[in-house]
Image (cartoon, rainbow, N blue to C red; front, side):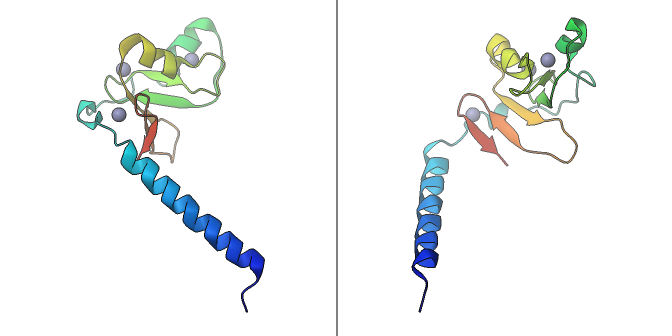
Length: 110
Ligand SMILES: [Zn+2]
Ligand SMILES: [Zn+2]
Ligand SMILES: [Zn+2]
């Protein structure tokens, strides 16, 4: 006999899968063709270095190579760069991370 908890957990998993699948289908990213073969413009967040501030994580703009700090950082320069330039897609510049994020569609790209 299956435990009630186990059954409920499976139902929740299935529901989550459906929601996530629909989410992905509903918001495809249409900006991938803007991605260029760029290399990082700086080793750290150039704007923070200029301010003498520090950052948590680095993100690189895949349209121009600008390196900015993440939204957990005080200055959020990666997001500021998007607002200033309209460049929609960033990639994590942290070692071992290769996810991308589209600011316009608010989706992770893999
Ligand atoms: Zn997009
Ligand atoms: Zn910064
Ligand atoms: Zn850019």
